Length: 489
Ligand SMILES: *[C@@H]1O[C@H](CO)[C@@H](O)[C@H](O)[C@H]1NC(C)=O
Ligand SMILES: *[C@@H]1O[C@H](CO)[C@@H](O)[C@H](O)[C@H]1NC(C)=O
Ligand SMILES: *[C@@H]1O[C@H](CO)[C@@H](O)[C@H](O)[C@H]1NC(C)=O
Ligand SMILES: *[C@@H]1O[C@H](CO)[C@@H](O)[C@H](O)[C@H]1NC(C)=O
Image (cartoon, rainbow, N blue to C red; front, side):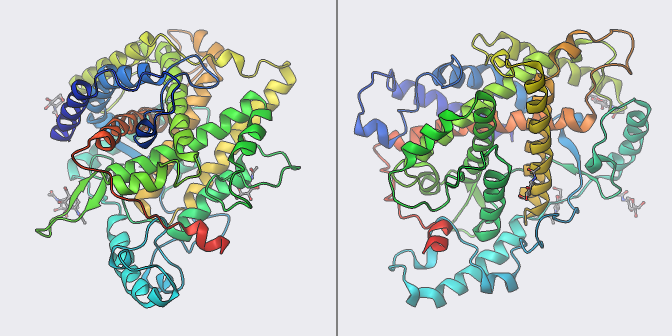
């Protein structure tokens, strides 16, 4: 963990020296810049903030502090129910060998074994064999290691006693279920799992299609990955998006940002072939290009990455708002070890102080500025949509992906809860723990770890930018294969 972070900072430092003043937005569409996504600069829509400032702020102020915080006992164990059945369709997502025969597991690139050959129906046989291997691999990589030490397990009994004594208003069915278990997040890092194909596609598709605020009269697919009639209609899609009110646009961009972030992790922590038969995880430039390059994504890639920054800003804002809640002396991060708890709280407050110091926060006051009744309805809609999205996560066929999917959705849900509760947080009584705004342990852990994921994404993006710029290692020619293409054709 540590050494990984050190390598990243080193790479960044090198990039800074080598990169000089490149990337300053001068408005010229420089083909070279296009190639390395350097045109991912400038001001974000819907807020007054530029990407370069976020990059710097994240690299130097937030990322290192968050990394340390996430290693503390309070934040490394997340209680989650991974056994809930999928409520929307029969759960065929598990990439079992049987399923694989009928459904391809590979989505975005031709399997290694046949990528040299032309992809056509004659190579199907090869394809199936490779898929079987991929499936076995996916099953292995997607498993959650639920190893916990006996000592840790004993501590959880004590944690439960403490948490039960707290008065919480919101009931989280996941948390209260007997199937909910603590998972050690450090033992189960989010990275490439081989989970892809129809199952993964369907999950994202239903999130975009059925759970975004989509006016009934609009029949065009919301999912940017979905096959669409005609090629160049990316423009009209965004014109349409602009026609939505700010709140609905915000919701769409949050989901898109989450999608980008998760994809970025998979590209940055890819299972790389090692000549010595060992497993090694590292950045896969080709995968990154397939998922984000403008020509591979009909111009979507850079927009998705911008949405990632937008999501980052929203969560950053929420953290700065919730500082007040944690600053109260009665809120502690209980693990039963006073020394540990004190250190954890101090580190958390340091992170929150940094978030407060960011000068260009998203102005959430512009949201829900309509009349009171309208605003209330919208808030409720947001809440229901998020609840639904976390149910859809139960349909994710790979345990590890489900773990991180749930954590990040809950983290984002918690961030929105905070943004909508500003007044309640301001009015918190200092000495009365059980009244007013509350966060459960699970929400706190999800909030900080989800933000940790975004912070890592932005860090990883810097590495890809550098790799793409580096002339000594020319970027591989992209040849991407997408599941959506199969569906369309
Ligand atoms: C789970 O993690 C523990 C601790 O690192 C390790 O000893 C064990 O082999 C792992 N189990 C699996 C199935 O990977
Ligand atoms: C952990 O607890 C289990 C059940 O109580 C016991 O069988 C096992 O030996 C313990 N392991 C260690 C390392 O103490
Ligand atoms: C919840 O998601 C399911 C599956 O995508 C969808 O059918 C349903 O309409 C959604 N409900 C709401 C309230 O968004
Ligand atoms: C309590 O936490 C501190 C700081 O993490 C640690 O050094 C110490 O060993 C812990 N004490 C016990 C009894 O686990």
